[in-house]
Amino acid sequence: MLEGIVRESIGRKASKALKRDGYLIANIYGKGLENINAAFKLNDFIKEVRKKTSLIFDVKVGSKTLSVVVVDYQKDPVTAQLKHVDLKVAQKGVLSKYMVPIKITGIAIGLKNKGVLIQSKRRLKVKCVAENLPNFFELDVSKLDVGDALLVRDIVVPNGVSIVEADRVAVVGVEKAR
Image 1 (cartoon, rainbow, N blue to C red):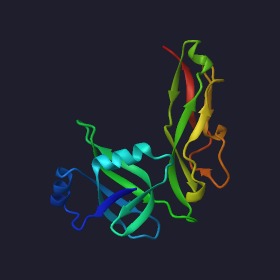
Image 2 (cartoon, one colour):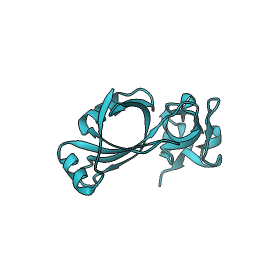
Image 3 (cartoon, rainbow, N blue to C red):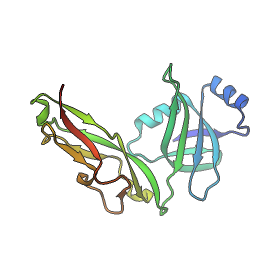
Image 4 (tube, rainbow, N blue to C red):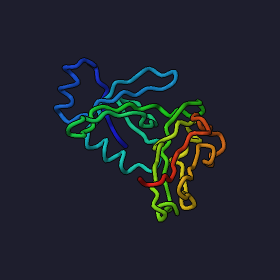
């Protein structure tokens, strides 16, 4: 389990000092909960995120143990090092919005017919309770030819989960190469 510290001071000076010591600045929030300003060891955070098997993972901050989901992060534009992360508490029984990644499987027929596979959406916004949160949406593109696309309405959604995006939005498609 990932362990972090609660930041007493949220000023710029304190944040810079923590970053210099190898910490990652984090904000943890949830519906009806007070925001927690936290910091995690950068390398420990990266290891934990890489080895997790589901979107939801546990963190321990101070005396609290929370189940959280990564909502947003910021990277340094030059070094690509992680600078800041926002974590949302996945509360059981509370309806909330999450971003679920899309996993593409198969090789499209259109690629052999001089087409290019274009993925316009990497993640989809869904509304559900934490217990029903899918880890990813798997899309099989093996039947797509040049000019074909998979739309949001083509995605198989588990019970209790609704996609917030419009159902006519293209997620992945094959276009003719120029």
